[in-house]
Image (cartoon, rainbow, N blue to C red; front, side, top):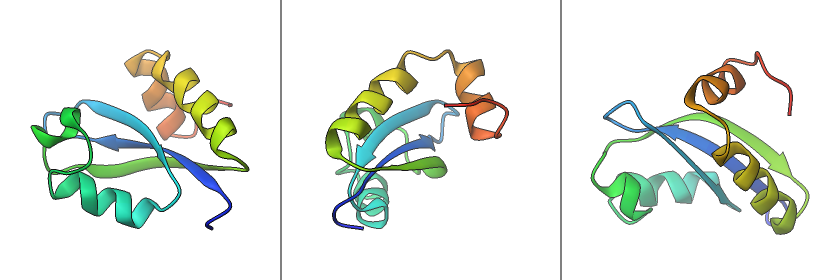
Length: 86
């Protein structure tokens, strides 16, 4: 999976959603839950993985991350629940 990139959404302990990208989701989740993942999630631990997409390149992942971040919470929840298309 080293040559792939993932976009993911985690749910924080305060019920907010955080979107990011990584090349290794397991390592990234450990980082988030140990307080080293991002400033946003650091104060909202623990986080739970709710959604992920595998993309071909880092560039594709960054573009998809930006698109997801523009979605409303309702739209993100639909995406998580499989009710929305990419």
